[in-house]
Length: 276
Ligand SMILES: NC(=O)c1ccc[n+]([C@@H]2O[C@H](COP(=O)([O-])OP(=O)(O)OC[C@H]3O[C@@H](n4cnc5c(N)ncnc54)[C@H](O)[C@@H]3O)[C@@H](O)[C@H]2O)c1
Image 1 (cartoon, helix red, strand yellow):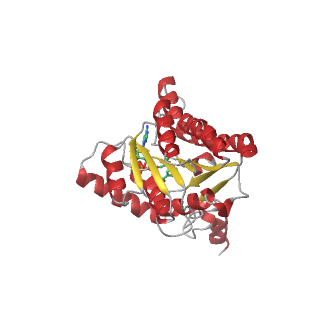
Image 2 (cartoon, helix red, strand yellow):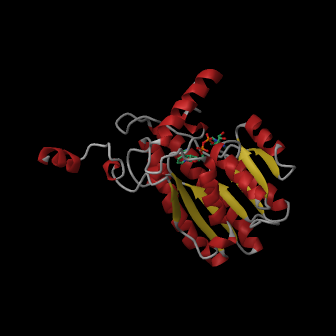
Image 3 (cartoon, helix red, strand yellow):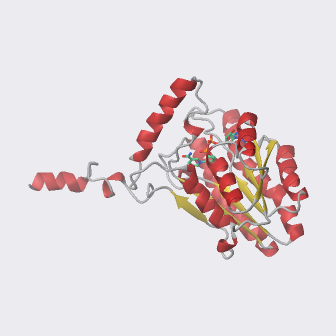
């Protein structure tokens, strides 16, 4: 019960990583305010929590929505924890084609939203003597090949924002950290596709199949894997941890595929065959 008597905000709490984290925080004693544009999903999560999760329709592209979400949790007794997590895939256009408008929209959704989440949480936390903020970055912040360019650059920005905010806010006893998920089976991959229920279920099955073999640990990454890391970073167990990130990716960023997959082609296996 690491969050007994604490109040937390989770953006993107209607689905996937945000939903799992809201449920985990409640399981450990917190009262949680989730903000999302998905009203049906948000109400659904709230309905499963015995009144411990409150849903507020929140578009993280809108600063006034973010401020209202933080204020709602604070008004109930003080804001202790914020998980800036809402997001989507953003523009898939390559750098030689992307428009300035699509670039800006992706940065606003994935980076400005986190900056404004910190901006509007910090004064409330300063007033009560401290708090913990966790931001969702991605392994796409660390390397190429995980996501499109605009998304990856925004997530790299989230990582540096995390360190800058940690430095600025440490004097107020506010810790700021990030989590870098690998391939996690949530709705994010199909959310932007206009496909119906059955086709969507088939696409999600296919994604789960790919996810099982996408990294050294041979199982699909789950939203609950990320929730566990976020709960640690947000808790007093991490009271001496700030300005850093935890990568939760089943080993995906360990190194090239041939270093962990005996079937993958490599120079060494080619030479071995040549020599034998
Ligand atoms: N799933 C992965 O493999 C993975 C990997 C790395 C990082 N991430 C990041 O994790 C975070 C959560 O994604 P997820 O995988 O749980 O996906 P998801 O689609 O299951 O959940 C994302 C949630 O964010 C909400 N959202 C989208 N735009 C919003 C807006 N403008 N305002 C408020 N809410 C909005 C969606 O409605 C949804 O409920 C995202 O920031 C994503 O970039 C996911």
